Structures are given as structure tokens and as C-alpha cells.
Length: 60
Image 1 (cartoon, rainbow, N blue to C red):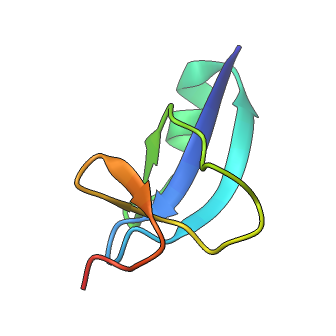
Image 2 (image 1 turned 90 degrees about the vertical axis):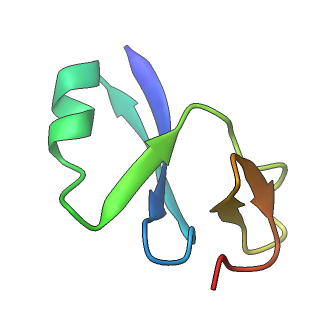
């Protein structure tokens, strides 16, 4: 089992957390999403994955 934090490739917007068998979870991503193993700091803010860290500002 693996837990992935899924974000939108275009701007890094955090979309959801997914847990399951690694190959199945990754296969469900599609071309417009990517993932990290690092969880967002909290659920109180909108997070973006930019330069290998979570930030409150989008990549673009």
C-alpha cells in the first residue's frame, strides 16, 4: 500500500490523496496529474506543489 498526494501538473494545485496498490494508484492519474509522497502541511489552506515543496501560491 502507498499513499500519494495528487496535484495538477499545470499549476501544482493539490487535488486529493489516494491510497492503494502503487501500480493501480499511479495508473489512475491520467496525463494532467502527478504526485508526491509528501503530504500538504494542513487542510486549512489551498496548497500547490511547486519546486518540490508545498506552497500557498500556484506555479504560474
